[in-house]
Length: 523
Image (cartoon, rainbow, N blue to C red):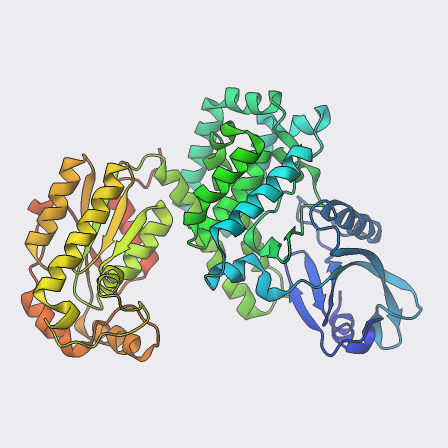
């Protein structure tokens, strides 16, 4: 759609109902015009291989398919297909004129109730997740199935989808995807498919290949008086005719992407209870990798769209990188032994950023001294405690209490067979030794991540942090040299020791960790 037509549809008088404003959002395949109460969605005339909207008739057909299919899970939102008309001032949805395109008309959902936003604001409960799980379970139980649909669960069909993805993401190597990561993911996927043909055949024979949604992620779920799941795959049946495990894998992968994996077990518990499908877990990691790769591809494709503003293209690039790194992380987790990582470094040295990024990629539990310390002191995590060095909640006695609690939480994780990262200064050899001993007791791999950076950079970080409201850490430059004087550097005799210069990017440091751990090949 040319710029003149786009601009004309940003005018309120182009719409049949009164509206004070019109806002345009874009995906890689659609223009969405958002009015006060409605959304009008026009398909872009693009051919991406896996979808083709290049002709007038195709766009009309897929608009109707979008309405038909989405009414399965969100019937009251999808109002129908409307004509885009040519007028003297451009394009319009009102009056008369030549039909130049079609749009899907929807009721506008409340943005504050979108699941991604509610999760970011901490407004989602376990009860909400269970409600979503029951909604999807009921949908899957009643979804159409049959011989034609079941064919899409074959190893041949699954391989075709993967090969298409690998072919299409190849052009983004060294842009949003590292070449070695693509190799690692490709190798793991091929190996898994070769070793698990019986598993895929069993899923087909038991009837778990159904006409699913195909696009269940956080941005496509709205929690109003009920669960509304919208924007399913309408443009390609082979993406919608899929294993129910692949359908929920999208949702679970997106929880991981948004650092909300604590809700995954809640969802799976309710979903399995409702469907009785306990075997859904067996191919789940395989499909989570698939979903992360697909999202990485979709975000990467936005970088090629000249209609999308440059700032949005840059944001898409960062999101694509994160999705691809998550896919790589899923692969690495398959061979990760039970592990205990501890950070070690001065305030402002990048410990928390490193720990958080590693926990994201490897799906590991994380416990942090800053949060535990304030929890023990019954101080809100967003409230500063500006005690003098070695006083108040930073006294010797309180430090001991904090590390005891960290040790207790670490033991609980290792005892349950879970890996964990402990984010703390660990300035004393004695404290590191206690955690090394705990790892040995539970036969866990032990690794010290020693973070450092130039003092000037540490000061910049600490000064920036102190100016931000709600920061968890109380570290300040005036305390830095006192801590530095007391710091006991770790040695190689203490266990696996990895030195990290955090003046480099966090992704580069995570790569160094994984390379040092010999996980980079993914075999």
